[in-house]
Image (cartoon, rainbow, N blue to C red):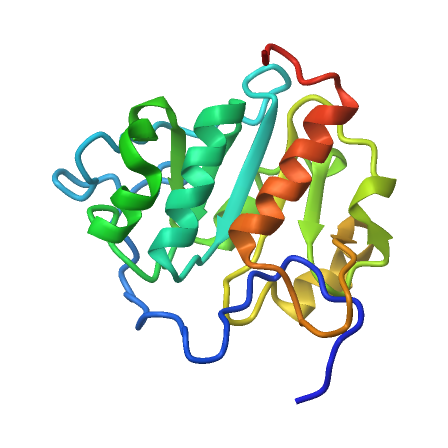
Length: 212
């Protein structure tokens, strides 16, 4: 397999780690756009969902995980969201259930502090996004993540661990694609690491609003 010297934030699973088998129904069956499968009993204890709100001022940042596959990655990003005020969005189908013990363990007892929305599909979410504030994290991005000015309410979109974001989306929205530079020895950072790098760069640019 060739080495991509523009490794970025696709969150690719390491050899031998793999991604768990995918659940075709995501985390919970039927639901409305913006809430995804919000059926009773689907969410783990302490994990609550709410309708998405991308208006300026609703959250300092939004982190979107498109079809995430590995529960501990999502749990780590949930902890990041709790510590920074970022709004977490999960796009179905998910590779796990929201009551997965590994998901809850990685998020520890911070889940009640996480603002979470679950969306039934990427197409339903894409139409609702404020694209002047959206950035797609990919190893194929032309811009480095530090070259971007992140406004209040910026939306950071990350792809699934095994494949990253769809090539069609990156081609269509090439002007919104950014990458995290790395040495050529790896294809990409773990998605939770990548999320932390970009979230804190965005907050640094704005003086860490409301943070001590």
